[in-house]
Length: 171
Image 1 (cartoon, rainbow, N blue to C red):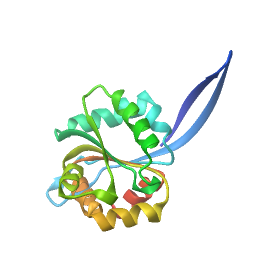
Image 2: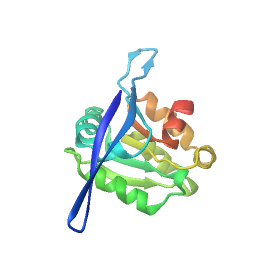
Image 3: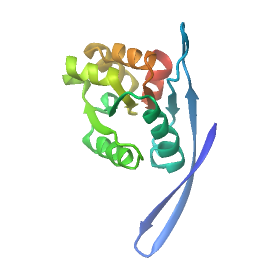
């Protein structure tokens, strides 16, 4: 479904409004014991993170409904684990009506505790960036398997750009 989002940027005394249309695809998975509500959101860019109608009312509600560990994991391997992008993620998580603790899991240093955190989290967001860089990091750290287990057990997964490709191809 195509969603229309409006961003407003203030500069001096002028207010400029730009309208961006991005496509958000929602996929629910099935398993052999019946339907599992494991929504997977594939986003072309990060615009939906700033839309209360989408991020708060859809993603946040879905994450809360999972009954899973109240954690929101950010996987930024595709962008080199840029700290500024994690801060944007934290700001978006703070808008949710349910308390989720944000965590930045870095694939390069992920151990057993981080893999388990991804598997148990209510929400896992895969950032955009370089598809190959991100996927190589996930495979070398075991996070690719953790993502599959998270999807199979009901986590809400949201991929942005390259992150959407990771989920669409391998998740």
